[in-house]
Each structure stands twice: as C-alpha cells, then as structure tokens.
Length: 135
Image 1 (cartoon, rainbow, N blue to C red):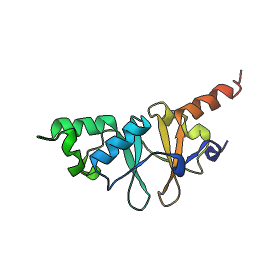
Image 2 (tube, rainbow, N blue to C red):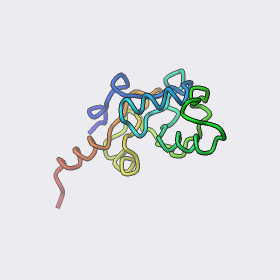
Image 3 (cartoon, one colour):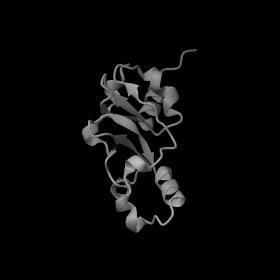
C-alpha cells in the first residue's frame, strides 16, 4: 500500500522554520503540545526534527540563557540530537514500519527534498493491526 493514503499534509502539520528563534519554537510546541516537530528551511526542505530535549540541552549548556532571552537564539544554532530520517512519497508502507519504531512520526519528502507532510506512528500501528496475519 502506498503511503500517500496515510499522509498528513504539510498544511495540517505544525512545523518550525530553521530561521525561527527558540522562543517561537517553544511557543509553537507548547501551543500544539508536541514534544517534537519537523524543521524546515526557507525553501520548505526538511532539515531535521526539533525536540524538546534539543531546546532543553541548549538552555542547559548555554551560559546565561533563560526562557526570557530565547528570542535572541536562532533555531539554526540549536544542535539536533536525534535525526529522524525522512522517506520519499513513493515509499511503501512496509518501508517505514521500522522507522516508526524509533520516532513518533516519519517525515515525507518529494524528489527535491521538499517536506510534504508526515505519517504518524498511530496510523502505522492501525495499519499493522488491521493487516491480516499470514499463518
């Protein structure tokens, strides 16, 4: 089965632009209550996944950085500790099952590495639960 059936399109996904500040990212993640979000550059290309842990480690490891001055720190200066590998839109569902075991969502890209959406772990589990088991 083609993964496009399970795709949550970009317009429905909360993501952070690489050119954003830490404050903008924190506020977006808090508003949506997400622990991780896709990170996109100014061309809409997927560049990684930003996690709460990335932000926390940046605050911890940067002298004098507090929540109040996170508006002065760019996301591009925050090291990413986890790299969620994206999949191509032409991939098959079976290709992403292993990826979903270690990440909450799988980013989906096109031929130019343009982010087009995500597939959540929930949809992958539902697919696997409904699939008949071969004996």
